[in-house]
Length: 217
Ligand SMILES: [Zn+2]
Image (cartoon, rainbow, N blue to C red; front, side, top):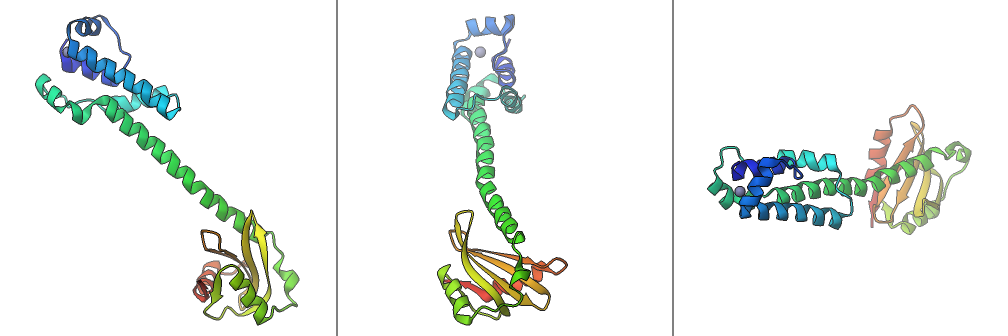
């Protein structure tokens, strides 16, 4: 067995053992050292990440890290740093972990949006049909969440500061030509505006118009 054959074999299966590999490892110090490094690095890596490296994933990643088939032994030795399977495995696993982490980072944002929209859809804007908020009430609510009105949003029937999922938000209801529109202004960190229009009306149009009229200070 040649060095590159052995390394290719162990790259696709790090725990591969047969007579030929055992014999080669007994005779070739370089390959024996290479394998020890590979295996100890794997252990250190999975311990460091505390995820108990999922066997199947590990195998699939390793199988993709095969060295170039045309490489000769001397090329393999000089190029070792370029494709060292343990490093390639580390990079791949870190990439996977990175993907999972960034997905988790995104989740709260989506969840947050869902929570805000769900809170909005639970409101009964029609209860406020016969009311109208004064200019100073509206101004006060905007100021409290760190925003101001820079355009016309129409008649505000009701407005108040409230709490949704631990976020202080400004809530107001507009009587628009297209029906009632409910709006949540969330200052904390995200500076988001959530707009919910009455069923059957074009929410995106209302959203654009309202967002254009609001300015975060
Ligand atoms: Zn060898």
